[in-house]
Each structure stands twice: as structure tokens, then as C-alpha cells.
Image 1: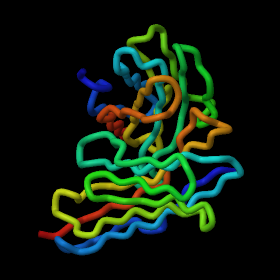
Image 2: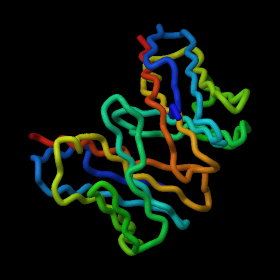
Image 3: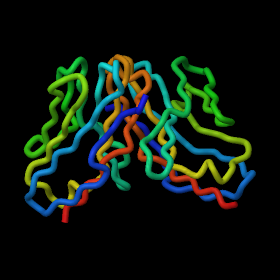
Length: 113
Length: 113
């Protein structure tokens, strides 16, 4: 069991560019979560999928952030027109059905110059 | 709305010191409470959880008691070691919103050798 895999580990973009972050959940897990981590705000919930269906995206900034789960083996978080304030560590987590125990990946550190 | 409060952003101790990290929560529901630990370069991982009020959870020498009366879930360890240096997150899952886990802002523990 390789755990939750996130790629890339680090991404640097220029202001206004697009960034796509990838997550491969643990095989057999039906729930996938995305969180954003900063020193100031800690861990912020962004969005959640269950059985590939989007359930709640209440934490997503509406205009530039989107997430998809096209199949059970991966999810993507896309940020359009990145801004310096988007700089953070983006964490993906998966679980068996809901949020009994979240298994986190190591995260993608996004730096927007 | 639901919230988890960790007031201590950083704690510095020496080996064999007693650890106490504050955590309080606010919800109208019936929460499950968690402590997650994040080591440098990794994603958070579950340390312990408690589902039932007035119960205690323990793992690796850490303990936390779910106190419904004071809405607290403080983390304690009798004798910390240098390897315990990490960020500790208190978290809550409200059973009326079962999929979403809300995290506190985290407490960075630094244990000096």
C-alpha cells in the first residue's frame, strides 16, 4: 500500500498561470478530500468527493479553483490565474467511506511568484 | 458555526518535560474528536480519536479526554522526547455533517535534546 500519492511535490508558477495538482487515493477508498495548509490558517477544507461524485465544495474559492475526480484512481485540483495568495501546501486525503480516518498524502507545495 | 480552537501556536520543551496542548471545540452536534500529528515533509496522520463524551483516547504515550462539559480535548504526554517534535492538530467531525473534518490551526511542538 503506497498511501495517498500527490504530484508534483513542488510547483512554482508565475502570477496568472494555471496550476494542476494531482492526487491518487488509496486503492479501495471511496472518499477523497482536498485541504489547503498555510501557517496563518492551518488546514482549511476545500472540497470532498464520494464515489467520484462531488459532495461539497464549500471551501473552494469560487472563481479560479476547480476540482474533478474523473475516475476512482485520481483527482485533480486546478487553479486558474494563480495569485501569490494561492501559495500554500495543498493536501489530498482519502478514506474508506466518510471521514472516519483521513489518510493524507505528503502534499504539493505551490509557490506563486 | 463549527470551530476548533488551538491557542498555542508554538510550544518549546526539553526532553522528559510534560506536554499539554489546549484544544476547545464548538458545535451544536455530536462530534468525534481527533488529534493528528504532522512530521516535517509529511502529511498529517491520525494520532488518536475519541467518539464518545467523557472517554479517553491514547496512543504512543499521548492521551486526550473528550470533556463535553468544558468542550475540550486537550492533548497530554508525561514525558516528551525529541522525536515528538512535530505539528499537532486538533480536529472535529460533527456527525450531522459527517464527511467534513474541521481542523484547528495547529501547535508546533519543538522538543530540545
